Image (cartoon, rainbow, N blue to C red):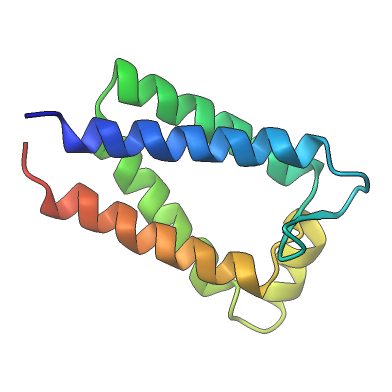
Length: 120
């Protein structure tokens, strides 16, 4: 049986890398992917780093630790994105809008479900 933890980390890493690279090619400092998800240079760099790490973990490392880390980061960013004042700070720093806040929560929940529920 394939290692679900590593496979999930690899797939998530590839997706994060693609999103990060895509963000570099948007026309403005604060562009948007699919006119829904805001991005900027700093956010794109973070996605590339997280994506490369996920790919590395999916190939050579321990998937569970990556999935736990991404899961908790997603949950924290998602919760912070709903707090008045903090949401503005996240928007100014990382161009995180409400769509990304919800997406962070979904990715966080799924990542934690994989990390905690899948036994290997």
